[in-house]
Length: 440
Image (cartoon, rainbow, N blue to C red; front, top):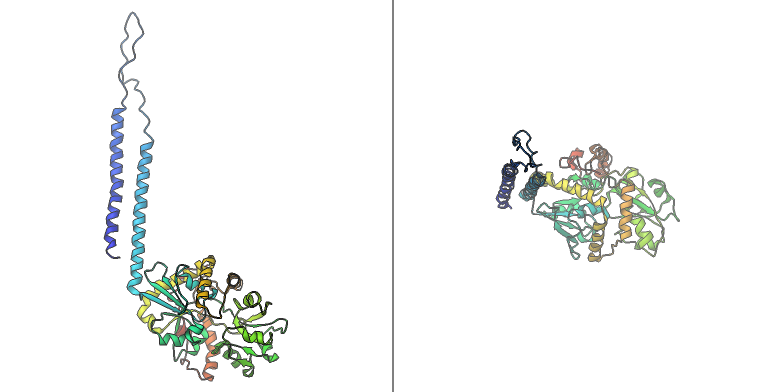
């Protein structure tokens, strides 16, 4: 890469000299034309007469000089424009090479992102940084390819059963190769003492996490209504949001079932008699349009509307990653911001590739074109993927994070979690690397 710089510089010299030669040649051509086109001094043959009139001096009524040939100035301008274009192209190529070289100078050659679930539209902006031409490894749950012209490789790893349903924070501390992880804000608070992480970009502005039920069986307007009904709540284990709702009195411990793995089996077996926790961006469309054994609408409440205001699935790093790769993060995070902008503006190509990835992984998890399209609609309608209050995509409202810490840290401490003493928003999130000019 470095050796190509000299070649590019040499390419620009002929381009510049062409302009000079063109101007000199054009100037010489004009002089020659003036000489060749000088008016003739020979007078026309006189009419026969007795006295031959004296010829009129040529200088008194010279013939007009010929109009300059239009083609030459036009050709001259065209050559100059072509030279400028060539020089600009050479400069752009050099800038791209220098940018790629800068990434490879300060970043690991391979960037690994560990997600917290199977591939889905809620991860689309991260997959978009590779684009639809990446390589699928269904057996290992990975998708990899060039990272948006940076000279780096990106590998996106599926979570869920591919990591044994472990918390992403635990996996990040087991595998140093993982650069970014999808770690929810509540998990960052809960793990701040044992496995600290710092969020560096918000993928989702509002969490799509919801409580879902059969509207033909129940009608709820709050999480407390679910508590009062005494209905079983099926959820993932661990689920820090469920712990929050129990500790704040909105759910009862006795109504919880922590055996949920994302499969519809338990809900179907109950004939809609239970509430379950999942994403509003996926589950309603899945159960109505794909799970034929149900085939009916679901209703839901967003947990965000009942105090659980965490940032869902932001990109986080270990604290030592910031220390070692600060310059890399400054360059890399804007690339991931732009990935989400590009994805939401044109989601179909990447969504179709996500279908291929899910099919290759061959698990119980399934998607369809309609599911992906419905997810995009919900993400737009509910502002799940959107700018923050200041018009920037991907940054954090630190006051919002601090409010959640103040509410939930005592709950986790009471439950025995190792929360960092005196935890502040700045301990688990930063806007240092977010480009404020990037937004929808």
